[in-house]
Length: 261
Image 1 (cartoon, rainbow, N blue to C red):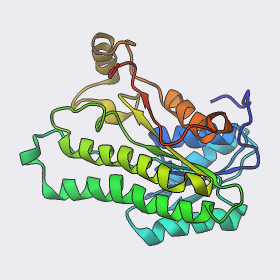
Image 2 (cartoon, rainbow, N blue to C red):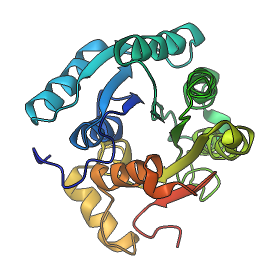
Image 3 (cartoon, rainbow, N blue to C red):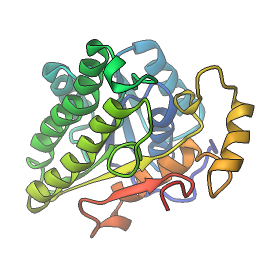
């Protein structure tokens, strides 16, 4: 991450990012901070969140950041994260609902019921509860706000063996995004989604696969010849959250190296 952003679209704005202890969430938090935002990062484990805060501070950004441990599948935790954001910074301008889990690799009939419930609780109920708490705060503000949900190409865009349950939860995020967008655009709240495909995170590695193996697989399988970077996904998120996307409502922006083209 560079220490100086070429743009500052989020100066004096406050962004809340869930699942920000690693991967896409961490990169999104760093990107918002680089463009001037006050950033609040949440997740289930405090230590990775503190590491994200440290990276933001070391990058020399002007943004402040606080780490709030929260389980998005628990309504009280989500509300506490929003309350902590407002207590610290006075408002909530942007929210990115990134927290998600993957449990799969086996045919649907062999998926443990616990894995189904875990994915449903975090990937669907977690987004629902986050949206509720975020929207309640944003519609109390004269300037409204912007929300970006992280869905997936696994869902409404493509299916894959061994990922039926995960795809179902992410399809729900895509549809929930569009429905919520229609419900609340007249409240001054824009809601959109980003659907990443394979990204340079551990989640895109096949069992036993190395990063070099993945790169070789991507060269053959993806039109672009490589997986997307977390920075590229973050760029899509920041676009949708910014005034550059002022007329974009209920979109589901795919970032997948051409896999679903």
